Length: 60
Image (cartoon, rainbow, N blue to C red; front, side, top):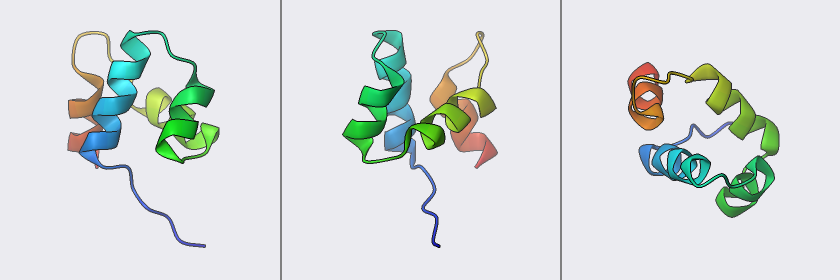
């Protein structure tokens, strides 16, 4: 099984969609990713004081 990391564009997309209260299932469908991938990404990079996408990219 191969795994493709989320890119900065996908992380920014997730961040923006979350700001507009989109459902995680919709975000996953639009990115052609599994719901669990999106949930893990969100949980891994939670921080109310900084941009989600920048934190995620720095960790990657």
